[in-house]
Length: 344
Image (cartoon, rainbow, N blue to C red):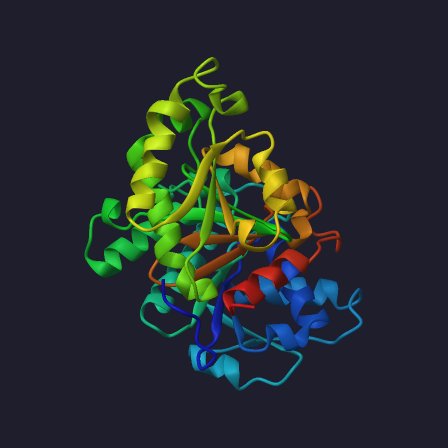
């Protein structure tokens, strides 16, 4: 994973224009100008302008959207100006509605931004939330950001997608979780708990961590079954699949322990102190890992993709169509994602 450079701007894809992405972006610029300095919005200028006009009555700080052409132009704008690179075709977007037009606009922004980051025009990519149904309606053959960015990276590197394995890491204060599988059904997720997949997850974390924290990580691994299988009474995956992966990882020099009972491992990870504390917990499937992270406070959560050839972070919330266009969106998770992209 590449490190984020302060000499280049950070790309921030707009997200689904019918959701809260544009609102959280503008609120972040208005309320936390220092944190957003050098961040460049990639998306649709008309959408951002309309959102800015609506929010102007609700914000104590004046902001103005400013169309820029080159990424470097974002570094030249004074406080109060929101740099926007327009990369999508205008469309009739209805706030709070799932549409193909909104899905296409969001996907085009992500694709353009990712390719620009891969060309080293930006130091990192922060992504505002997409809506998976809108992507599908637009004919986008990816369920979310992670898979799309993996495919774009593989294309850039001239490699098959399978040769660019990635993992999703979710962070909230006091807890980081990496997932073995991401956006698949629960039945498919259980099938994905293989020794090779668990070992690959551990290896990706181990290789990514020095660029994040300057040292090798301490990793705990959750089991799959209740009580981590209770020595085989409630399932054999811990004995036959997960423990062998942990053993093989240790031979490779990875600092890892487990598998631990999944109903307590996240709590114990937060309580641990000093050298006993893990940097990250590996969860076997999506909801096993995301529920504890989001319970701790979605407003501070950050989603980061490990294994990409660039830094990518995202707020840990969705498009929130139910509150879109009402001025209620909270920008704190987006701000946390920007800070994480800078390594803060």
